[in-house]
Length: 202
Figure (cartoon, rainbow, N blue to C red):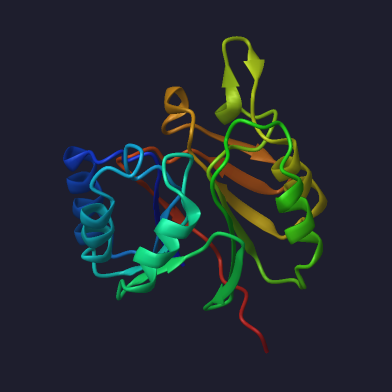
């Protein structure tokens, strides 16, 4: 499965055109937005329309610049966008787990409670959060780590997590690392293509 992911677009038309170009060039199966596609919800309707107009199935979470209810309502009217906050969706043999918002707390108790209720199997998992997991190259700022321990614990305790996508820290756009078996990445506003192997059921 080919995934085009981006984060922290913050209303940038230049970044949007970069993502648009990658859609045309790479023809991804899924597009993922890991939050902060606006600047505190300015022009949020327009940005949702632009993302929807990419013409591919989009899985989107809110960042710390978007409120959950507002984003959920606008996404419900979009043709191609699924709002993924606190959602668990399996698409073509890949499980996508989303949790939006936040970005400033070392732990996320609401995510921990949500994760406990998930009924997981051997399906490969793509985790979508706005804040990065703790203690990786993508949460390292000013000689310390500022990511989320709850997300890191989930990745470390689930070997089926193959990709963890986040944003939030602009200094780490384009950064990647490994945590347990997962590639962890901050794709940045211009977007990055990822390949996830699909496990076909016999």
